[in-house]
Length: 443
Image (cartoon, rainbow, N blue to C red; front, side):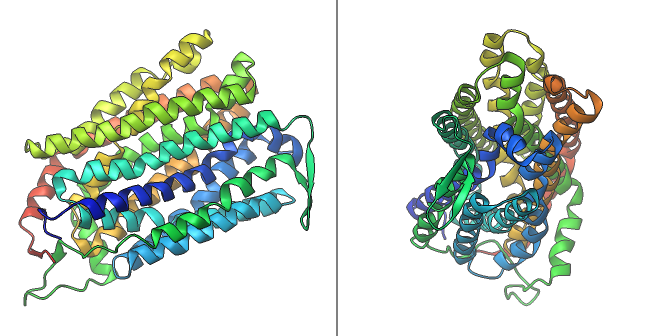
């Protein structure tokens, strides 16, 4: 697609894919409002609940992401996404039928399997729809679905929990008796099937930036050759990947435990805690991801080769400096400070994701994105909620100490991220120079 052609189909795709991302994150994050009733009704610990939030989902999401990314480099990306949406929507609804922890864990794995299809294919499609100087903004708008979805999940959960009254179970026709909180999974899962139909209206874009063989023909890369391209730029690739992974770890730790932190520390009702946190995430994290993408694209237009990584450096400094906010004893001050980390955990998302697209040819973009997401989800999602729970359960051995667990996880993770982004500046500049001298054909 020539860069001077209309971007309307691209922006339409961004909006539709963002709606899919919103749906996926509602499905993921609803558990953060249900920690109390799930622990009570299934007799679980914080650590076991954290595994439902993180590892159960991340396990197959991460491992299946790589073969799905490979498929997206070769097949119709739109159709892969449609199939994935249908799977995660049905598996979310299935969570409303589970009877024990094992069944719940398996259903959450199924949600992860479906959601593994979305982002590798979406990133690759957007890189074909948009020129480089607009790509970070487009990816940021798409990725705003994370924070819109997370915020909506918390708001919906808070409202439904507050409306639930004292009844612990409800009896449904054909289904029988389930816990009241399980109704949420029907409400948020089944509407995703309508979004799958909406994605049918998105056009699969023509691929551009394809690597050429010596004879001038488009090169067909084997899996080994595709991984070889990642290894050639591994210093740049893994600096960005690990840098953002630990930002994501902070984000998932906050998302999983902030409502519970407000309940345990200040005695708030879960509905109030969820409503306030959900609104903060929707407003400030959404603003952060979009403004971060626009700033990254502005730096690109100005010729700042490593501008995408600088966004990460600025963000991690701000996150580290505000990591102490859970330790503040005044709830009003806590709520006043909370928008700062919520803004900055989102700020580098579009820039970092676009950085991966920038240094890879078309035939390896979805695979590279899948590897990038493998680390983000296996470490960030898989360990973020659990790191907080492990400290609370086994180090502090006190549910009320969750504030210390949060602060410690955030501080350590932000410092690791800052080091990775800083290390990657020079390798990333070299990778961009190499990419500019790589023979490619635009179709």
